[in-house]
Length: 119
Image 1 (cartoon, rainbow, N blue to C red):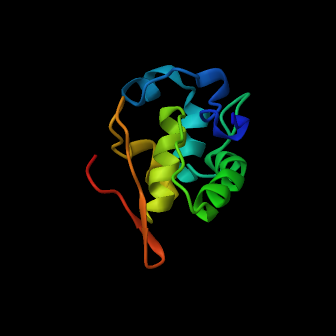
Image 2 (image 1 turned 45 degrees about the horizontal axis):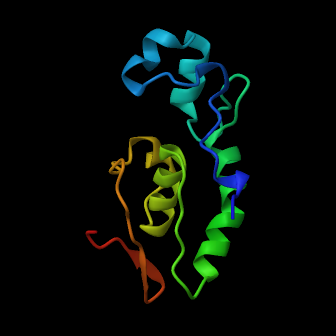
């Protein structure tokens, strides 16, 4: 079923701005706030990483509790966040997390953690 919780992170006024263009495309005040606190700084008209995590958390819990395989089709930012969660990587690294595009990825539960074997 479709879960709107899995929508990509809402970057508001800066939707579509690539990381390489971030400095040129965003205002200085926002850059300074984001540099100080990237997790809690809200994008103008959008959400913060903290908001994003809170929105995706119910789906994380639901996926984690499943005993059957689950297929998640979502935007890159959502898949980066899921990868960080399942692979126990700090959420502050989510936007830089290397996630293969157009690829099926599998996470397998194993002793309280999840591993991502090559698919």
